[in-house]
Length: 284
Ligand SMILES: Nc1nc(=O)c2c([nH]1)NC[C@@H]1CN(c3ccc(C(=O)N[C@@H](CCC(=O)O)C(=O)O)cc3)C=[N+]21
Image 1 (cartoon, protein in one colour):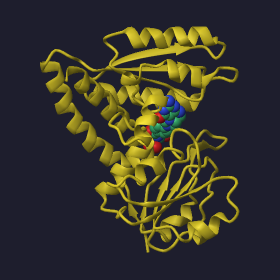
Image 2 (cartoon, protein in one colour; image 1 turned 180 degrees about the horizontal axis):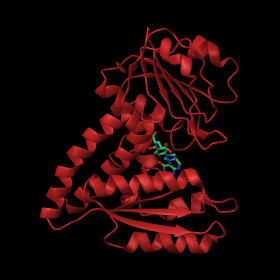
Image 3 (tube, protein in one colour; image 1 turned 180 degrees about the vertical axis):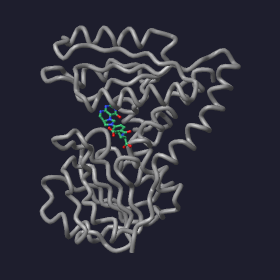
């Protein structure tokens, strides 16, 4: 069997086309949404993602506000930019690209953000809203994964989803989304402390690999016909992306998200959804 491709690039393009109409409507009401990014340091991967986010924004008519600080920036300098973005009315949503340099208190920076401008859905208030089933911006990678599964008709209701990884942007919030009544999945969360990962993977209808370990999920660990989503963004010595899913999984799985071209573009699309929705909410 060769897996059906969960095409994140095409799905993201469809989402962006829908958002273009909504941005035009906002502009007609006098509000042009603006996406801010704060990038601290010179990490090549982070620079690429941030550049991609601004390219996407421009495509749908959203303004870009790019803020950059050197890796040597202090806590106070970073917090000053966050305050500036909170107060700037032309910035309707923004993200602080993670990770921040060592020595910076990331949680203090994230808590300082205006939760209503939190385009990542990672502010403690918004993660709290998610736990409490209250409306708010959703974390982009988990929501992007759900939208991709929905678009390709992968059954989530009643499915056993095995999530590998417990990072704040993907692995930890994803089970919160999947176990809402509206999605109704059963989730097993695995991580580096999991005793027999292959045994759990083999039970999964859907595998989400978000551990950041190259080729962690092997073909022999995947149930034939399962859906496999690759969130991994490790890089090899040439700077090429290496996912958490072994390429051989393609011959076993029923659905697979390519990497690049799968979850990454969906993450970026959901970021724009959050920016547009925040702007819509601000107009009431
Ligand atoms: N505050 C914050 N929010 C994030 O959402 C966030 C973050 N920090 N830090 C780092 C991770 C990683 N991440 C990616 C986004 C898009 C692609 C993406 O679009 N990748 C392209 C390929 C890009 C390439 O080839 O280099 C693709 O998959 O097709 C990848 C990775 C967001 N992150």
